[in-house]
Image (tube, rainbow, N blue to C red; front, side, top):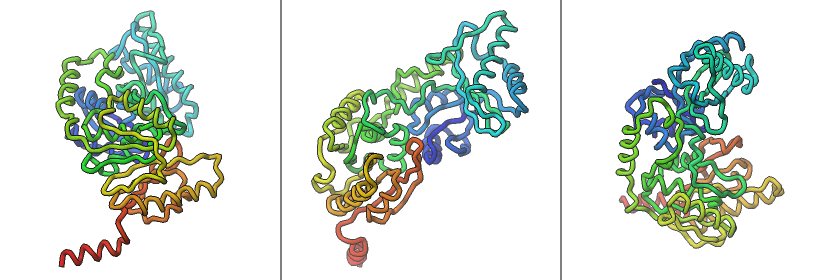
Amino acid sequence: MKLIIKTQEGLEEVLKNELLLLADTPIEILKRAVLLDGDLSLIYKANLQLRTALKVLVVIQEFKVEDDKDLYHKVKNIKWEDYFNIDNTFAIDSVVNSTQFRHSNYIALKSKDAIVDRFRDLTGDRPNVDTLNPDIRINVHIRQNIVTISLDSSGTSLHMRGYRTEQVSAPLNEVLAAGMILLSGWNGNTPFIDPMCGSGTILCEAAKIAANIPPQNYDRAFAFRKWRNFDSALWDKICAEAKQYTKIHSMPIIKGFDVSQNAVKIARNNIRNAGLSPFIQVEQEDFFYQDNFDGQTVIFNPPYDARMKESDILNFYKDIGDKLKRSFTNCTVWVLSGHLDALKQVGLRAKSKIKLLNGEIPSLFCRYDMYAGSLKQKWKSQNEHQE
């Protein structure tokens, strides 16, 4: 089967690298997605284990269309009775990127009519639409005049892990949080700190990565579990194998801090919901008054309030840079921000800058390597030691 696995912009390469651990098959990178061949086993594994996937789609057909009538007839010609029957409910998600077709809701409606009419012609009856909890989810994607019809094997978006029942304002997407950690290269070999942890999303994703715990719950209501060809024995085998590879007995130190008492409460609740309380410490503490850190990996998404004056935001980021210089010796620090002018005020040279989207906000994920003294002095000391 041909699979399209969706992700967020900027995480396509990370998703590909994740898939290389699951599948020995060529992988093509698309915009916000990857394309590959796979079987039922890979569909199950991808949904359970991929940290940067949003959807796992199974392509049914791809074709060109001239207009909405052509779309209707070609959708109707698909043998939908091979996939479900009139006793099943279904829903259609549509994504349109076309100068010819402009309204995704209209495309979904035409596709729905085509499917319903096919069943009515065959049986005299029709399946019902259920947009909330359908048995079958169908994805219709139009790029100019190319239509891709797929079965959605995931159901609700995979960024919804289920542990975040509370959140602070502007919370970080779980897929983005996991992607940031994977981009950093951190794998549990150093202590991990999020000094402005908010809802605790980065902390939860870090703990799951360190423990090799799948991002999804084993009992999640994946859409593929309602398919006719669902193989429960294969699914149980995949879940059992995943449980064997967890490593909760060799966890690094993972800590979060936030100046807000409410944020700390929310983070602790979410961490408890995720079953990760034994592995993560969260304390109320102001970033600018935290003790010295040494040799840790630090990843955080500094907040900024759109209502703040520009000068306040710029000074806030300048203070962040000053604090990093004073108190985060020998740490690898990663900062995500959508305020690009404020990032310049950090006053540190970024070793790397990665473009990401935080929601719809273009952002930079910047790496700063912090040293005791100047970098020039560090190189000098290393050379003297080697001599």
